[in-house]
Every structure is written in structure tokens, then in C-alpha cells.
Image 1 (spheres, rainbow over the protein chains, first blue to last red):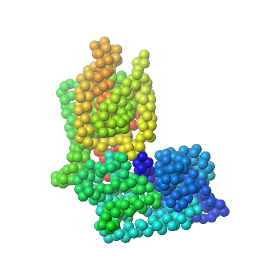
Image 2 (cartoon, each protein chain N blue to C red):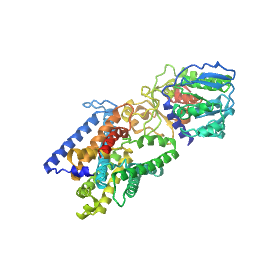
Image 3 (cartoon, chains in turn orange, brown):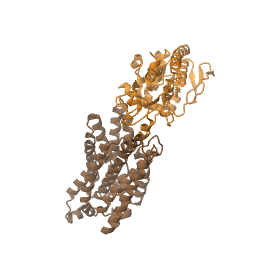
Image 4 (cartoon, each protein chain N blue to C red):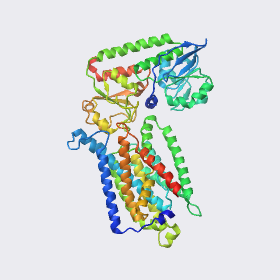
Length: 299
Length: 328
């Protein structure tokens, strides 16, 4: 159930049309507050020592735990199912509507948000309550690295964050080296079978597919998660189909029945929680896709 | 309704046939245009196997379903408007489409394997919604425009909130295909869906046409129609039944495509007068033209992405609705 929900989170990221890539610039203005820039380019004043934080997205919850700051999380969403400890933290949000009263009652110093649409609904209220809101909007692996760095820095775990990043980068460059120079198959990522949602230009998954040694067949299609015309989908003739695994998405749409992917049995499923969350586990997804695309390189 | 009576024109058989012929030609033209356009360019004189699949497996079923859906919705609207003596009666605005949508969703949740359960339960939902609106709108003094529209608003919003409730309880992946479908979407067209819509559409149009004479009399008033020997209750049952069946199958196949049942019969009445013997069959043809063209826009406007066709019909229909409301 929660797995399926995470795909919904994936769609939520479609709101990220305007992820900015400003570098983090911690500047000390007052002794106990620093100024940071989030992925929307907003300047935010954040307490130097954060002890209480809330995460409003499963990927951010995973990042917080990855940098060993899980003990500072006082609130998460009902989709936050990883790691196991996250499940025992108080839930303050379900789909797109965070419970603002719950959030304020938990007295967080920082709220981590990963969708701009969520932001508008409660930004002002949280500002009035003196609660900082930090937004992440990664558009590829580098953006995910930055999220990890930012979250680590905010929660006073920069060293841990660097350690995590070193590990992740090593794994990514291993994959990139293995797949370098190989022929890049044309990959179609199917998010929903009936309503033919896929990944577009602005999705971070497009970057993941490319780094796995493939080419997204829909890399030029506008927006992050477009609903594609079936005619176009048929004409794409992908070499590989990757299914973001969920109940309504266990097989390719009928339009692919004569595609090379189906003909050569190159249809793979991947845990939607891995694929749809721009957090540390995206590298698991990247490794799995790379192995699916180039099995001969990972024996 | 007075406008409708005033606008009653006697058409000679010859002119009716000529006008019908023109509409059929227009429909064929619309179907041709729709077949020529799409997110993929096809070289029609030398179709590759793949292009043949695009044309016959994807584009054609969708165009044909759009025609059947458009015809069904327009005929349902034409019938309801005459029966209720209300120019603003429309399946979407009366909440009938929402009733059908809720029925379809429940069928999808409880009997997912049985595709046929969807039109059946949509028919059930449409019938219940029709009955509810009718009961709320009628009063001792008869049924005025405002009362019916208000009842429709109440039923529509009530059913919308139940739909929201159901989608909130539904798991997220199912919800995703529903949100698009709810707006009216033909992209999941299949030939089977088309056959069901076609059969119900034809039967519904025949039933509605068979009541056309009685509906003409009922436009004057139910009591007067009774004096002329019209079995009012029987007519009402047949018209409600036919419109619910047509709306039900249309919604089950393509969600709530709004405003078709409103603007198509109106344009037909403006052009050819309000004799239901013509309005009903002509609305069927014009409804098909309207939805086929609207869906062509939905398919190509932002290709290779897609819009829901309901967004296009509402974009055209809503301003026209306001215009008609002011005119009355």
C-alpha cells in the first residue's frame, strides 16, 4: 500500500518546474541564525542549532535518517515508510495536505518540503510562527547530492552527509564507468499503465536513466511527469521498458506489444519507492537499472 | 421553454432530409479530419505496419468512441430539456454525469475484473441522480428554471463530495488514472467500449425519437399534453431511462464530458427549430461532430502530451451556458 502511495509522491514532484541550483551559502548574520538558499532560490533564516525538524516527504525523511539525524525528526508523512524507525514518528500529513495545527503543536524549528504546491498553502502561517521552511527540488543526481548536503548542514550533520555522499558518488561512478562506451538502449519508464504517465524533461529520473547507461525515450517531452499520447508511445518503439512497480502498473501498456522491449523480453519492474524518491536509495535504483540495461557489465 | 415553443418551426420532409444529409456529411468530414490529425504524422498513402497500428488500433477506436459518446450525451440533453421544459437541463449540470461517474468508480473498486459492470453501475448511478433531481425540483406549482438548476447544483456538489471521499480512500495509483478520467478523457478507448456505447447510443436515440411527438406536446405543459392523450408518466419513464442509459455508458467509457448535452441541442434548435422529431436525431449527429472535433484538439494541442477532452468541451460550453442563462 505505502509503496503505491510513493508513486503518488513521484507525481507530486511534477510541481518542480523551477528547481534552482543556487549553491548553499551559509552566512552568519546573527549568532544563532544563519541564512541559506533553498532549491527554489528562496533565502531562509535557519537556527544554527536545529533540534526539532519535520519532514513532509518520504525522500527527505530518508535523507534525514541517512545523515544520522533521525532523532531530530518530530513529524513525518504517512508515506514515510523507510527506514523502519520513521514509521514510529508522529504523522502530520497525508497526501498534499499537511495538518498545520499538528505541525505547529510539534514546535519544529525547520520544516523540510519537497513540493512547491504544498508550500503555498501554509507558508505564511509557518512564517508567522517563526518556523523555517526549506524546499528541495532536485532535477538529477547532483540535485539529490545537494539535498543531502543541505539537510546534513541544517541538522548539524555535515560530516555524516559528506560520508554518505562519498559512498554514493563512488557507487554512481562505478556504474558510470562500467556502462561508459556501451550502446545506450532507448528506455521507456512507465508510471501508470492505463493513463500513460511517464517521465519527462524535468524529472530527476531522466538523469538517473542516462547515468545508468540508457537514454530516456521521453527526455524531450515537457514537464516532469507528462501523460503521453498512445500514438507517440507506440511510435517510440523503446528497447527497454521500466515499470515503476505498483498495483496498476505490472505490465506494459498494449501499445508496446510490438516494441523491441516486449519482443526481446526487456521489461523490468522496479520498486516504486526506490525509483520515485530523490533520496539516497535512488542509487539502488540506478544500480538496478544499469544491471537491467547492461547485464554483461555487472557479472 | 417559451422560447422553444416560439421557435417551433414546421419543417417539410424534403428540407429535413436535406438538413440531415448536410449534418451527416459534416460528421464524415469531422471523422476524416480527426483521422488525419494526431500526435504522430502518418503518411496515408504508404502506411507502415506501425502506422497502421497507430491509425486502426489507437486513433480510430478513440474517434469512434468520441462520436458515440457525443451523440449519446447530446440526445440525453435534448430529451431532458424537452421533458423538463427547461433549456438548461443537461446531464452534467443536473448531476446525472456525476451519478454515473460515482457508479463507475464503485464498479471499478468492487468488480474490477468485470468491465461490463462499469456501464451497468453507471446507469444505476445516473438513474438515481436523475430521480433525485426530479423529486427535488418538482413542486405543486410545477418546475421552474431556477428550481431545477439549483437541485442540479445540490446533487452535483453532493455527488462530487462523495467522489472526493472515495478517491481519498482509494489508493494513490488508482486515483491517478481517475483524476484524468473524471474530467472526461477518451484516451483509454477500446473497440469494446465503442461497441457498447454505439449500441446503447442507437437504442437510446431510437427510444428518444419515438417519444419525440409526445415531447413536442409536453413542451407546452404536462397537463396540456395529458389532455392531448399523452401518457405523461410513461413518456417520463422512457426519457429518463434512455437518457440515464446513454449518459451511463458514455461516462463509463470516457468520464464526465461536460456541456455537450447543453450546447448541441441548443444550436440545433437555433438552426432548425424545436421540433423534437428533428432535434433528437440531429443532436445525435451534431453531438458526435462536436466531441470528435473537441477531442482532436485535446489530442494535438500540446502533443505529444494530452489534454482531457472534457476540458475542451467545458472551455467552449461554459461561456455559452452563461450566454444562454442571460438570454432566458
